[in-house]
Image 1 (cartoon, rainbow, N blue to C red):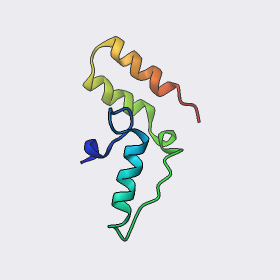
Image 2 (tube, helix red, strand yellow; image 1 turned 90 degrees about the vertical axis):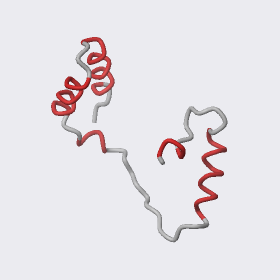
Image 3 (cartoon, helix red, strand yellow; image 1 turned 45 degrees about the horizontal axis):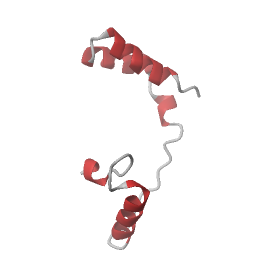
Image 4 (tube, helix red, strand yellow; image 1 turned 135 degrees about the vertical axis):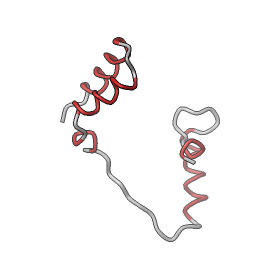
Length: 75
C-alpha cells in the first residue's frame, strides 16, 4: 500500500500527484493523524541499528555508506 501512495522521486507523481491524492482521500475519511517525526532519528540507538545492518549487509563498503548516512545527523 505504501509504495502506491509514495509520490517523491517518481515519474508522473511528484508534488501535484501528491496533492491530488491528498484531496481525493480528504473527503472520505473522518479521522486523520498529524505526525511530527522531526526528532525521531535522535531516539534510534545507533549501536543496535548498526548491529542489525551488519547482519543484513556484510560488505564493508556498504556498511561504511550506512554509517556515514546515520552519522551525518547530529541532534
